[in-house]
Amino acid sequence: MSKSDIDQKLEKEEKDLNEEYSLFLKHLKAEKEDTSGFARTLFGIVIVFCAIILVLLIAQENKEIITETFGEDSFVTKMLLSLPLDVKNKQHVNFTMPFAQRRQNILLCGVDANSSPTNPWAGARTDTIILLNIDPKTKSINAISIPRDSKVYLPGDYGIQKINSAHAIGGIEMTKATIERTLGVKIDHYILVHDEAVRRIVDAIGGIPIYVEKNMYYHDYAGNLHVNLSKGLNILDGQNAVGYLRFRHDGLGDIGRTQRQQWFLKGLLEKLQTPQTIAKIPDILNVIATYVKTDMSFYEISQYAAMSKGFDINKIEFATLPGAPNKHGYISYWILDPEKTQEMVNRMIYRDRVSPTSESYNIGIKYTRASKETAESVKAVVEELGYNVNCFGPASLPHSQFIAHEPSVSNEFFASLKRKAPQLNKMQFVYNPDRTYCTSSDITIYLAGE
Image 1 (cartoon, rainbow, N blue to C red):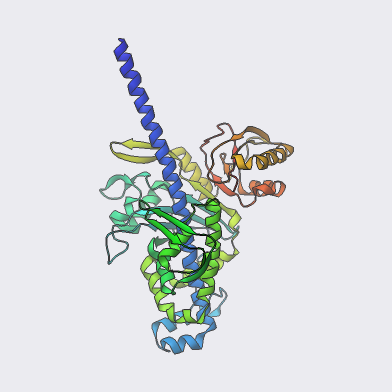
Image 2: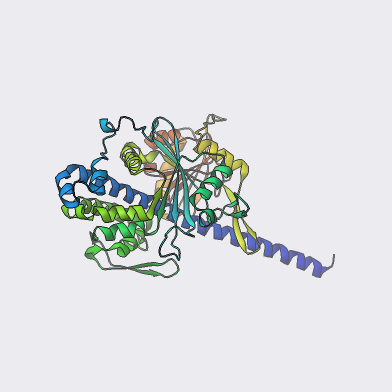
C-alpha cells in the first residue's frame, strides 16, 4: 500500500471518528433537551392535576355559589357536583378505582406546537415520551423516558421512522401501538399535554401574582423562550409564566428554576382558591378539554390525582431507553440496544428483581469542583460501610444523580444508603446500564454541587 493510500485511509478513519463523536455530542445535547422536556411535561401535568383538584374542591365547598353562577340544570353544575374527591364516597360504589391493586402503565406525551389553528393535535410530534409504571401497593412510580429519535417500525405501511413521528402520522393510537410492540408492554391509559396547556390555564384564571426575586432578561429565538421580567411583584400572564418557569440562566441554574416552580405552584393554588375563580371554571375546563387529551374520564383523572398525594416522590425511579446514536444519510437515529432495553423493561415495568452476584458493589464517585468536599465525605461513609470506591475524580456534571448500572441495585438499597449518607438525600435515582465515567462500577454517584 502506497503512502498516499495510507494517508487517505487514515484521513477517512479520522473523518468517521469525528462524525461518530459529533453524533455522540448531538445525542448528549438532545438528551439534555429531553430531560428539560421531561421535567416540563411532568410539571405541566402537575399544574393540570392541581387545577382539577382545586376546581373540584371549590365546587364541593361552594355548591350554592356554583348553582347560582351556572344554573341548577347546567352541564357544568351537574358535572362538578357529582365528582367529589372522596374515594370512599358511596355515590360511586360501582366505580372500580383506576389504581385498584394492579400496576398501571400510563403513557405521558408532551406534544409540540403545529401550524393548525383549529386542531392543536393535528400533525403534532411528541417532544417528550414517558412511560409510567404505577404500583399502588408499594406507592412507587417508575418512569422510562423514550428518546424522541428512537428508530422504530411503525404499524401499517409506514416502515422505519423516528418514534416522535408516530403521533404526527397516526395520532395517539399509532404511538401507543408502536410503543407496545417495541417494548412488549400493555399501555392502560394515556395523557397528552400540549405546550400551550400551562400558558392557557394561567390566562384563563386572569394571571398569577408572583414576587420576582431578581431581574430576568433572556432571549432564545431558536427555543422560542423570551423572558423580560423586573424584580418585584408581577402579575404573570400565561406567556410570562412560561418564561418564568423555564428561566434558569442565573447562578442557581436548575435549583433556581425548581424554587420558582414551587413559588409558582403556591401562587397558582392561592389564586385557584379565590372566589373570583369560580366564574372562571368553564374557562379552566375548556383549556383542559382543548390542550389535555386522555382516554380517562374526568372522574378517573380526579381519582388518580387524589391518590397521587400518597405517593413518595423519592420512590420515583427514572431511566432512559439505552442505545447509541447512528446516522443514516441525513437522518440521525437513536438505535435501541435490544438486550439492555429488555433488561430495563423487566426491571421498570415488570418489576423483576435480580439477586446481587456478590456481597459488595463497586461504587464510582464523580464530582464538580464545588462539590469535592461533599464527595470526600460520601466516599468516607461508603468505604466505612464496606463498599469499594473504585473510581473517584472530578467531572463536568449537570445534575446530582445516583445511577444504578446493575439490575440488582434497588431503590431500597439506595434508601438504606441515604440513611447513612444524608448528603445523598433528594438525589435522583436513575437506572442506566451504560457506564459513562466509571466503566467498571456497579453504581456511579454524581455530585454536581447543587
